[in-house]
Length: 42
Image (cartoon, rainbow, N blue to C red):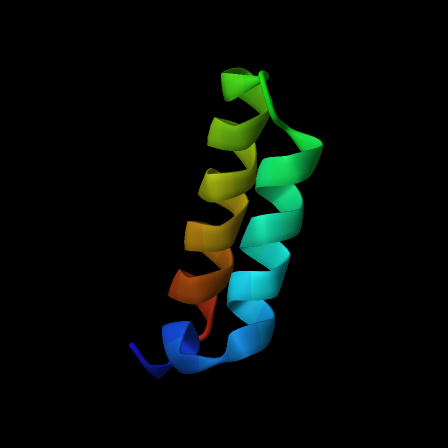
């Protein structure tokens, strides 16, 4: 899974966590999108 070696992925996740702070529902949704995007690249 070389996708997670990319720094922009971590930056994006960091931004998502700041945006969705205190909103676990939105964070869960964002993580689902991230996993779907990763799955599509394989």
